[in-house]
Image (cartoon, rainbow, N blue to C red; front, side):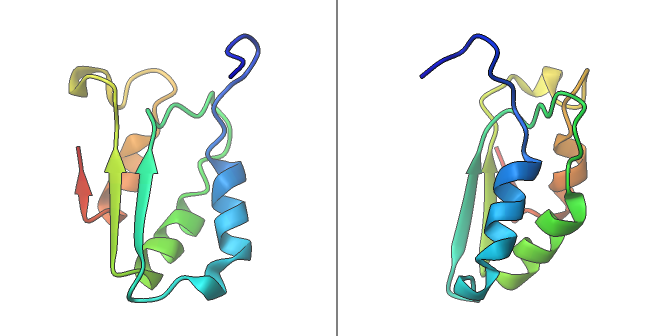
Length: 87
């Protein structure tokens, strides 16, 4: 997997999920894994909120140390209110 010149953009997968939201229902468990660093790109919180409301549970696994959450380009605080659990 390339790492040079590749930057996080959570808006892209969120828009892709939105396009498939008909496949999400109250039996779906949605799992996100990532540091929530969006490189100052749009976070698409509204889409994330809508997706989380459609599913049974939404979990976010953040590999960064908690002390780094919400620093710099981290947008985890925008997603936090909608997840069932954040770890």
